[in-house]
Image (cartoon, rainbow, N blue to C red; front, side, top):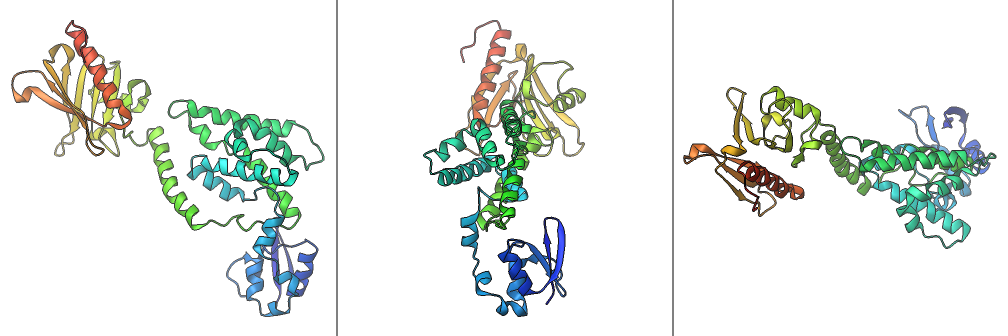
Length: 366
């Protein structure tokens, strides 16, 4: 059987199984290289191809005895593929980065027989990144500090953006990009020794589940932060997306230039479905008529409000209800429902009461 091998971007062969065993002995091929022979639909791992080849029984015993545990024992650093590293980083919102740093520092401690703490070094990865980068890249003849220093500075700078408001925190989600240089270098170091970890590109069942669940949550967070979907919590006016602010003004829900202190929408796909606001001049509640598709807006200026009744949510699924009374009749009142998440319903009520009492010329007693 003639087998072709794909290695380092090039195709080699054809080889017989006996010739391949010699290549493996000389570290010129690895059981994790991609391989193909006539009759196969696509390329597959060399170990798998040899395992189904008719001539496999003729292979020397030492080649067939190379196990995944033997390979893992020879692996240097934490050897994962750039693709797997990227997917797990993005799906976990960067949490996987701590695992990656921890595994690499644990290798360094074992190799040097030192007493460093991998746990502390992964927790403070923003500071220890330079030391790890220098350790990984020092295999190059040029041991300049410029490369590791640039990687560490880029990583640190991108991490710092997580403190910024929406959507300016998003660069922190891509702080893995400078680390891909180190991931690729670890791959080069191990490939040069014809060693590939058993976990290099393989996803375990729990990792797949994590990617599906956490990845969905992360995607939802990103689309909400960028304004593609509305926020499920009360939003402070200063953090309201410009597109949402323009929509409210364009549809005359608020006046142009009217200061918005708090905003909440119960719409899942769009704020057009309905929402509630506390502005500088009054309280606004709007919904969309299912028949006409037009907005029905209820508004009460603070000077016209006779009473405010608040019923805070007592359970997870219930909203806090704020009843705005402007007259004696039932039609002279309307209810503002807002989420209790993050306790912002209390902040919204406090601001409403403050502005209402100020308009009536008396201090707030709320």
